Image 1 (cartoon, rainbow, N blue to C red):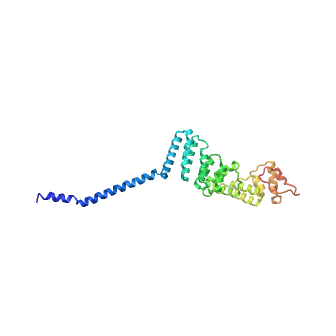
Image 2 (spheres, rainbow, N blue to C red):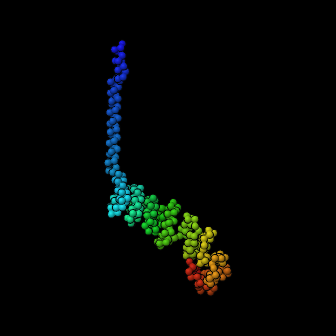
Image 3 (cartoon, rainbow, N blue to C red):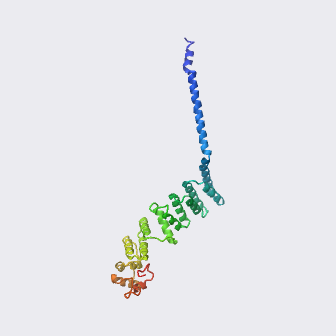
Length: 292
């Protein structure tokens, strides 16, 4: 019995040969599957489509290194290589981010140049257009930035960027004329009543004094200090006469004297209809004379 006990224990410890063969076969299959999976992943990384993200990412690393070391002579080629490998709009946004950083190191003009290329690659992309608008603003091209808000970018979606572009473009002579609605939007965005003066002046220029008075009254209600010439041109004579801050200059007193006559004295024409009234002649610097 004692001599047979080790043999029984060994029998219990060692599985049958058939079981060992099944386990060995399963291990071989698992190893083969693992090898096939690794080979499949490797082929995805080295195939024609797999190389593009890797190559683009590598080009960004190169750009980051050159920008950090301020190697400006080599940046032109590096940006060209990265741009050539860009396939998605997100790629162009990454390049634009680095172009802005490069320009901060002295690579002047790079930011707007990349913005132009990005816009050409994705003309309908809202994120690209918004990023390009920012680049144009920083590059001294606010009129180009404002133009984008007539296309892919909505002023309502990016109000602060629109307001910045609008004000800068107006200061540099924008190609597109402003509208009263633009000044209304600007007042809403900034919370300031002064843009209503611009809307009033535009309405006067369009020959609509009634609309001009309405815009000016909105500005006055908001607390804006209105130029006396604009009050006169809009026909707000009572408001002008009640202004205590105009001083006692001869011209200002004459203007207030005419205003005291109320609406009986119109600024459109003199009594005989031959031309402007004396008050208009005293104030040739008015924004827009109604009689014209």
